[in-house]
Structure formats: structure tokens, C-alpha cells
Length: 617
Image (cartoon, rainbow, N blue to C red; front, side, top):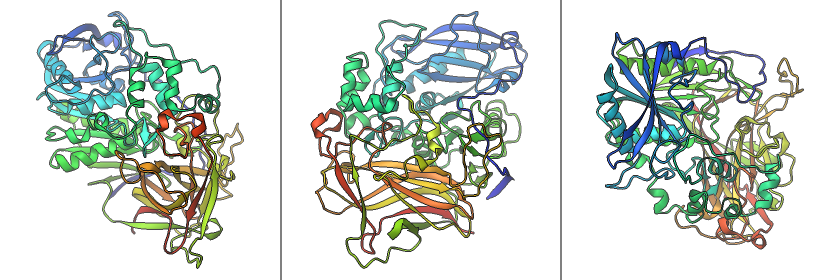
């Protein structure tokens, strides 16, 4: 393990969501020509592509491309981007930069299929990427025969598709925050629960059927209120969105017909196709990614298993979804990271990676894993993730809402804490009033819910020593319900000391003393406890064991802080409500939603706990 630099900051500063620092003065038009072409695919469909070509033709240059479903404006040969590539450092390096509307989107021909599956003998995003690369290296002047792909979110998924049966000219790929399995933790589901708020917003804006190719974006859905909690409560079951969408969003209707992990979802499982990868790959993940947190880890695991000799790098930083591309990365919400981690990533990781493999430039000094440790705020280099030298440390629920490293000692075989989960009054996921999911709830102060009677909160005494989590976090609950199905949400929280200083300046009077920073959290729909393909009801009153992952983290709980675990049965409207009755939840009737009493046991025989992978000294 190598520590790059210790980044110390005594007080956090306020982060402004969506802030993007201006690029240094660079006039793309002065240095590049722009052309728009329709590139033919093997089935005759043509994809709209924009090519930025350096005016200086004295040196052959690599091609850097992104393929996306989100549009590639500005359209028109005389309308130029202010920034090309991930940032204008690539323009200054002289890269040929290519953008493409994927099949069925914006100005490309063809039919859009949401995450088109990999079916043998059929066209897909892999074949489209192959055909595009083949055309580019044969038709774009002055290229050096090497192509690199980069993309965030959907575009990151496109990169992962292009890596499958890749064109030989593809020499470097960087899938960034790439969804890999949409039923297993990316974008739309986690633990079998449907990510209602994000799914509704994304599909209403990005998945509507179109009549003809166009350069116009779909008008955003008008919720008629700023209060998403109220809107989605009135919506009821997810399938009721058809009242707003009709047949204009075919993917939504598809999802509502596939409420379990069936062949529809299995065909969209990317990692099973990531085999025989033989070119350098830089995977990027964000510790506080609300949309595609699990995808990068699944992709990394698949490459380690299926292509262990490939040169695969993994960069992990303290960012929101895609926040590493333009943001400074020194803060998120009220949390400070002590340095500009986004700038560090762009200058010390991403650009050197592409320069080395596409231009033979520089001496690449990257470790296989470049990971930022929050809490202590320091970059580390490792050979693998999780790093070597970790052990499992359990924190058990105990009486008087304490969290202990030793199992509960109660002599009462029924010792448990209980709460009533009412789907008509679900626990909100955020204190913000909004209709879209947002990002900052990933580090939000959980004091807005911890006094609710339907949220159980357990915490340690102030820590006597630092505890560093470096790897997976898992929840192990022993529970019962009076219903026949329930959701269980577990959150891991870093509780700041009471005398922790407030940020300066502090215009919103944010109090950091006692701040409950959400570090990790996830949900399990209990009917999927044994199988995501074959759900089973819960037996009322019967103790049921639930084991589920909360994701990986690299974070130090500092001396004097407390570790907290919160347990609840709704996280609304980020996830749809469980009626607490064993039914098809997407099509549940209003009469199906019923309160249930949930019990969480804490006995030597039923030791509910959270396990952490911690680094040993």
C-alpha cells in the first residue's frame, strides 16, 4: 500500500450541487474542424456521428470516442462545443474526438431498445461500436489506428458493450459509472425493490417512443408540484404511471411485466459477456454514486475473474454520479475531502491512461487500484480491491439501542425492538422537497428521520481508536413481520462529535456537531431473500433471516466519532412502497397497502448485526 498524500482539512465547506468550474480559455473552433456524418451499420441502419478533427495535420492522432443515448449537441456543422472529450486537455493533446447518437436516439436511425440485450446472431451495441470503429479508422484522415472509448453512466455502459468482441483498433477503454445489471443494484432496482423516483424521471424524459430522428430533446415531465413525496404517494403502485405515459414509454410497460429476475433481465447482465478482454481498461467508480454504484464493482470483479491477465485499472473517488468529470471534488454536501479530488483524477489518472496507451506518451505510474479514503482524506494505491489485510468486524444490535462489537447477552429469547411500518406514511429518503432523486442525499444528515418511531437507531460509544472500512459492508438481520412481505433498509452512519466545528462561511447555519453522515445503505425486499427469480412470502410472526450487501466503502471512522446503524422498512419515494402483503407490487391495489409490525431480534441465538471489512494495522 502506498499513501499518495494526506489531505487535511479541519472544517467542511458548503458544496453547491451542479457546480462546474469553467474550463481554461480554449477555443475549440480555432483548433478543430467539425463534420457530421451518417455511419452505416451492418444491417443498413445509419448512426449520426460528429467528428472533431485537429486543424494541425502534422502528426497522426488517436481517436477518442463516446457513444450516448443523451444526445450530442450542438447539432449543425457550424455549431461547436466549448469542451471536447472529457475536458479540453484532450483537445490540447490533439485527439480526434468523436461523438455518436446510439441506435434509435436523436439523429440516428433505427429503433431504440433500452439496454439492448446481447442475443446471439443479432445486432447490438457491441456490433454497432465495432462497425463505427471500423469506419472511423478507414475514413477519418490522419488517425494513428488507435481508438479509445470513454463514457459516463449510459455512455459507460456503451463502453462496456464495445469491449465485448472488440474491434482490434480499440486500444483503451474507460467505462465510468457503468450500469451492468439493471435488476441487481443499478439505476432501477436494488434488493428487488424498484427505484421509483429515478425510473419515472429518466424514462419520462429519455425513453419515450419517437416518430422520426430529431435533434430535439423530449420535454421534461411536469409533475404539477415540487413535492415528489406527495406526487408518488398519490401515484400508488408503479404500474399506475401508465395513466401519465400511456404507451409512449414502452420500456416502463416492459419493466412492469418483469417484476422478478427473469430472462428479460438475465439477457441484460453485462458481466457474463465480459470475457477475453485484451486491451487496457480504466473503470471509474464513485463512492457516493446514487445511480450506478454497483456496476463498476461488478465489472471489475468480472474482469478479474474472466480476464485476469488483462491490464485493468480501477479508480474510486469521493464523488457523486459522474462528478469526477468537471467538478473539483473537494466537497460533497457538507462533507469536505480536503483537496480537489476530481482534478487529481483527471490530471493524474485519466489523461495519463489515455496518453500512454493511445499516444505512447509518458511513463504510466498507476496502481491497479487508485482509491480515495474518506474520513482521513487520502489517496492510496493497491494491487487489488478489496486490499489485502482486511478482516471482518461485526457490530451487533444491543439493548438500549447500543451497537457493540460483542453479541447481545440478553437472557430473553424474544429480545427485540419493534416498530410499525405504515405504507401510507413511509419514511422519506431525504429531507429535501424535490421531484427528482438528486445526489446529495448520499451523504445527507440522517437526523431528519432518526427520531421517527418507525426508524430504529443503534450507535456505539465514541470510538477510542480509528476504524477503517476497506471493502464490503453487509447486513445480517433476524426479523419478523405481521404481514407476508416487507422491505428492510439498513443504513451505516458516521456520527460526528458534538463539538465538531461548523463550516465557514456558514450562511445556512449548518450544524456539524452530532451530524449523522450517511455512509452506506441499501434495501432488501424480503420476498427475494432466497431468490430474485422465485419470490416467497414471509410467514407472519415467524423469525426470518435476511442477509444483504450495503456495498463497498473506503472510509475511516475517526477517533471520537460514533458508528450508527439505522433500520427502517421504507425509503420513499426513492424506492416504491411495499404493501407488506405478498402481491405483484407493481400492480398492487390501494387496498393491498397495510401497516405491519416489524420486529428486529437481538439475542445470542438471533444476533442481528452489520459486518464491516476493516483494515488491520
